[in-house]
Length: 337
Image 1 (tube, rainbow, N blue to C red):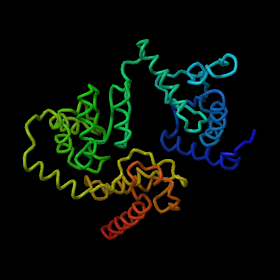
Image 2 (cartoon, rainbow, N blue to C red; image 1 turned 60 degrees about the vertical axis):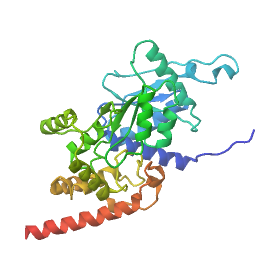
Image 3 (tube, helix red, strand yellow; image 1 turned 180 degrees about the vertical axis):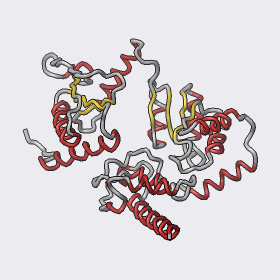
Image 4 (cartoon, one colour; image 1 turned 90 degrees about the horizontal axis):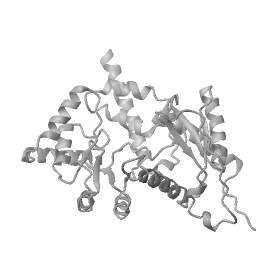
């Protein structure tokens, strides 16, 4: 039977190295991280990734294996009875950040098996509800057709209303809608205005803004509790936000990761944005300076752009960040004289 080589040794090594960097980028020192490999070959990958992580962290990570053979959608077509292996979870899972590892060819079978396990857990009362998150209208539309979906989370804010018609369909189908990115990933400065816009839509069930202080909690509560109609002045300000931001801004969904040279792309855009917003220029510059890989390390491979669900010109945006941060540093130097 002819075989097809998908990845050679060097390519697999590079992929594992990138995965290790991505885990470190997202989880820092990995104090609560546990790697769990799905038997059979996912377990092998988990062990190889764990060895790489141990080299970088100078300590081992908890490592486990999970057998899902009974949840395979093709087990009835296999020769003989399916082999049931033993799942080995080597550390407590309470409050752990579990990273599942498998080798798949994007057939969807592993995800389907995981979904079957979730549905079984729901039927037994271990979990209450199932939902999903989408970043594209096409996925949102498909989610509305799935009979197991009870909630859908999708970006909805002053500058992103492309899901408005689908949000209405959620209400018609008794599916809960959760508005994420209410401040467009930090691009919208006026949180009260942003929340007023979202809460004016009666089909929105939940909105999830980020908050860093009790003052912000109080301001957000006041905004969502204000049920008065939007004023003409508020609507004028909203249109100004749309005009100012356009569509080319980062939502910090992190789908662009991992960068081939280790740039934390969403953080670069966030800290560069602080140079002009919230009166946090110095703080943004300090945080940018703490990043291990700066925007000027970009080699313009374009892999990030191929993964971005918003089709942002990331390479050009990184170049602008380099220029903006350089200009800000120059102004800092002049002010210090």
